Image 1 (cartoon, rainbow, N blue to C red):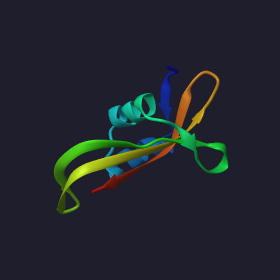
Image 2 (cartoon, helix red, strand yellow):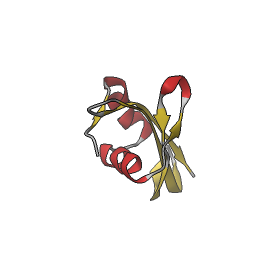
Image 3 (cartoon, helix red, strand yellow):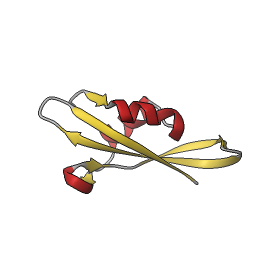
Image 4 (cartoon, rainbow, N blue to C red):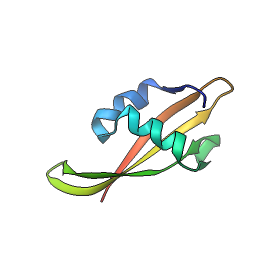
Length: 84
C-alpha cells in the first residue's frame, strides 16, 4: 500500500468531524473504493462508537475519506463522518 498523506484541509477537518488519522487509514486500506466527484475516489468504513458526539450518544460512526490515488502516494483531500 502506498503512503497516505492528509492535505492541510483534511487535517483541519479531523477535529471538527471527530475522525482520527488511524480511522482514515483503516478505511482506505480495508474498504472498497468507488469513484467520487471530479476524478477523486472515496470509500466508507463503519466503526463501533458508543460515545457522545455533540450531545447525543451514537452506536456507530461511518468514516468517508475523499482522496486521490497519485503515482507515489494517496492524498486525502477531505473526510466526512456520519453518526448513527
